[in-house]
Image (cartoon, rainbow, N blue to C red):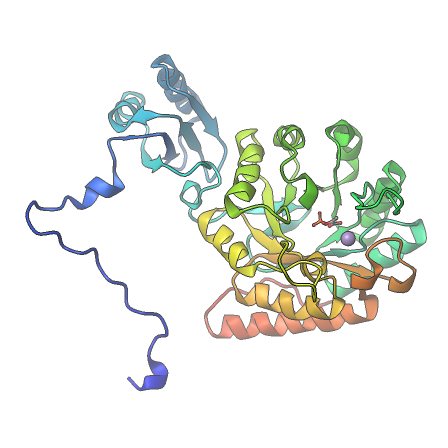
Length: 382
Ligand code: PEP
Ligand code: MN
């Protein structure tokens, strides 16, 4: 093998041998007790039998619940492995026991190792690379209809548009509220695109529900626990943005609220964190996005528009996210950025969309050619 053909990664080194007592290789992987457990059931486990397992475990004073994640999962609190093994045996269920010592449980990758699919309309996030695009805010029928046409024409999968805007200044445009959502839904129908919009208040949930295909939880609300609890109880996907000062663990625990509440349709979105940089609006933390993807089964996307505040950085960072194995991007564009009522300076022009999608398609094709990921972007309709 020539130097050029050598793999870049170091060979994996096996566990160090300890002299003296023989090492039981199962001991570290299979502790006798843990502060929490997941039981990953084999496919096809009958629901009634799973319920009887949960009842049995609860009867023993354990905290237990079943979840519809990765084909069926029972989450258990502090317990002995033997109690769980006996429970499985008594109910004739087959499943894998996973000892959990991380504060988050249900979002862990080993809960669904093949990765979750999150559907927004017809688009399956988690397979291929997906695009969410649109203006920061819905401003008028004309504006959102023009944006929707441009999005559909460029092959974007989901149309975004804020109607309830979390603005730093109380004097800034706050969004059109419900009227904005109606206009967004109408533009989505007209263009055949599903729509996503931010929810600020759990009290808006019922009125928003019929108008959006996915709810967005904004960066400032990542730890609005009442909002997370309310969204845990709905059968609509949630795009969960990372707070600008949130650690990876805090972000994953926010997602855990949604899954623990019963909503497994969660898409994580890294949108930039606070740093000492003044050259970009925030700092796109691609490293943490890649870690989030490795640690969880949830699809992970990035938002280079809010992360950088600079439209020219959106296409290259979208390409970086694609090459890094992430699941998509959310970005802002506007039919007339100079006239936008919010975030105009960071919005791409409609004329830039085709070139960006084409660039991503080529990067994706090159990656697929190299055996690094499957193709997922549609050919751009012309
Ligand atoms: C947005 O996407 O419109 C938005 C306000 O983003 P963030 O919550 O990431 O600031
Ligand atoms: Mn914005």
